[in-house]
Length: 306
Image (cartoon, rainbow, N blue to C red; front, side, top):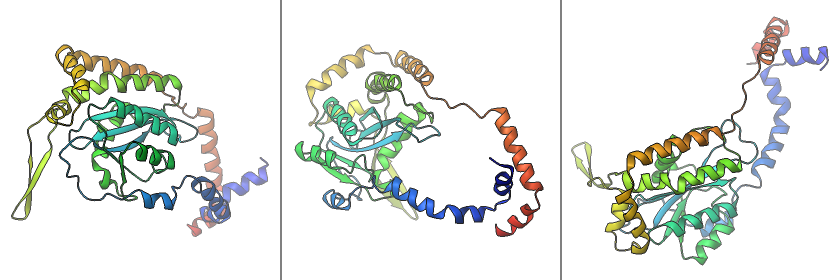
């Protein structure tokens, strides 16, 4: 960089920068978002679901992806495919590398085979990882109802949004995972200890009805039950798949299970890709450049454009 170019960059105003980069930004937007946007014709085949869930049997679920990109969204990184059942609150989670439609469909098939009840329907957002021909054909072939929420309306998928925080983000954090070792370790935790701890030992209450009392609304909940208890009370559950869970419920100690989860989380955190902080020399160079820009005569004029 020549001294003349450095002086010009130090004196240019933000408004002039936006004007110079405006054509380039429009070009980048077309490259970034032009190919990942789901087709409008496929959206017409997948119906919207905006009403409240009124189901009395397990099998109708909400699904979503949780990214583990950290502070850098470049390249491929892990995603957690999360699924929760509306009636029983049963949770299944798998880690996938990237969010390609084939990998997402394969992970969904694995979770479907492990459910102690038949999968009857999935409800997702409008991301391209779900709104694609591969997953649509899979649901058509397996007689699974496929619905979607409205764009930019997270309340349409409120159940899975809550589960994205509790079993995924609260435990995995906001660091970046982008290696095959982290993929194996995360799936080992999702498929074993964490799955048992959430579905066998964590009770929750469900909203039964709302009663208006004057200007307030009173919410009535049922008794606290674990997802396993709710599945066992349903006539649609598979007894052959519930039998192994019954044996584990009698033999597994939840406190030891919790310690195992904490140990595996520590090992998984060591496999995260932690970005190095900026060096002291680069920070000092940036500060000196800012001081030169403030001391230049044109800096006062550039403030008029802001």
